[in-house]
Amino acid sequence: MSAPTRPTSAFSVDVEDYFHVEAFSQDVPRDAWTTYPSRVVRNTTTLLDLLDRYHVRGTFFILGWVAQREPGLVREIRDRGHELGCHSMLHRLIYRLSAHEFEEDTKAAKDAIEQAAGKEIGGYRAPTFSITSKSLWALDVLARCGFRFDSSIYPITHDNYGMPGSPRAPYAIAADTGAGGSARVAEFPISAFRMLGRDLPVAGGGYLRMLPWWYNRAGIDRILDEQRPAMVYVHPWEIDPEQPRIKTRLRSRLRHYTNLGGMQARLERLLERYAFAPVGEVLAQMPLADYRIDRERGALVATA
Image (cartoon, rainbow, N blue to C red):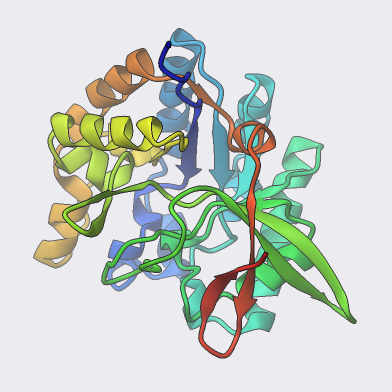
């Protein structure tokens, strides 16, 4: 009997500039963003060229702030056949916002991206994966704003994000749209694989850039062997070793700058080895288990 065909994984890009990251939020105030030289168009175009070379289409979660200032970049991503998504307006942690603040931010970002693209978008990714047990209410807001899928929940333990024990395979969440209404929002969690009784992060961002190639390959292979699609994510600034350096604390420097020069080669190895598609297309091919939000406990509960 032949082995089962491995699922197609999702490739995603969080379109933001180097000075937008949470690691620098204490060092680069938002009202000073316009004073920093932007490199997001250059770096995103390099990623687009790389994906063209390997005939890969992905999902680009775009910061609304970028879409307002670089609408041509949004259209370039669209015209090259990629799926467009939202990455918030101002890259603020959701669990530090009120529901009203989050909804206003999300509506502004969605509008900015759709105005630039001339088409509706249906996917969302939270800044710094900040949909956690403290902010599951954000899924209700996303449903009200018309989003069909989210890719923000990380089933690991981390100092800035994570929802340990949450599902590692894609699933659907019953969200409350208000006035007695509800909507089903698909969740494509960020990739983790189980080893030695722990859920370990893999396949994106700093984990792909800083951890050994064999670790990322082994983790992705385990996910695929379990018939789950992996979620690869990258930021345009991660392939830019010449970006300006921000004066900040040591931990943030290590997380942000380690192995920027080696990231593109790692991406090429991934693109050679695995099959990828946009997030929405991968989700559309999958049966999704249903979950509801236990609002008292801040947890997801499987429904029969």
